[in-house]
Length: 450
Image (cartoon, rainbow, N blue to C red):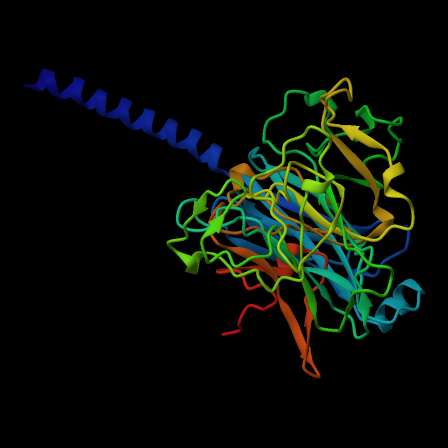
């Protein structure tokens, strides 16, 4: 019996030692780091950081959001940050008076600066400090804003699938605006989390358009001064044809019909709608987009691209597919612009992995200087998120529908305030802050404040 005690005791000691060793290794793996975020500006002005800036840190696994204020050197510190991916952002608003005092430029309204890092990977090395610089850039603001995007669609079998897609623009100013010649661009970029031509990507993971082949040589500023259009749709008119009052908007449908009723395609096939509550009535939409007249000779038209009597179509400057295709996963961006130049002469480029433009889909290069408003959408889960297509001065964040494709959800801009009965919408050029989801979509409406 005594002979058995010693071996058992030794085994217990060995097990305890092994457990302790594993625990030390586990603790080392779980050991957190300190994150230091340096906030700066994209100019040489000496900024007084005593005003302080709030940096937000969102864990993309837990969705926990932490915040920290910058110190006198413009550094915000986060202790005990675990390994993983994070969205990090800072937004700073200046009143017109404060902006003029700080920057020496007279403005008429509030000015917003944004900076962000999306899906930023933080690795752990025991006791280390991870350092990141966020450079604040003045947001581009305009009187027009993108108010609502209904790209996800509704149930494939019980509702309208993607036939009920629409977008809405809004006059966020205090004066009458004219929609004539205003363009909506669908912004192209990475559509997949993997890419076979890694040598043609920027450090951010987005396309390096300086390496793309096109109808003209790629410019050295191809990534900083331009966006690339998957599709461009332009409002018709002679300059004063389509006035929009302050606090009003325009709804543009893929098909301006009541999608809660059965739909019949060009071949007479009837699509029943057993759940009309999941889709929307777009019969009162201001415009629709009919692509068929713009197809190339010999190209077959879509069976559902049917003009609605009494409705005007936007002019298709650049088409993508046979109908207006809003990506139901949320992998593209959207931008409003108005250009004085002939867009037909603008260079077009193939995706960076291509070595020729022959037979390839081409994307029009659009100067960012013409952009009035822009919104980036992303897939609804963190593991499917893509490198941002829009830079911080256009949209420092992104928006998405939480339930994903065919969910009947839309994203809609928040109401900032109501002034003399006119709704003024939030516009900080950070869609993570400016938008929220809504279900069902409300063409021409607003999300109710409860």
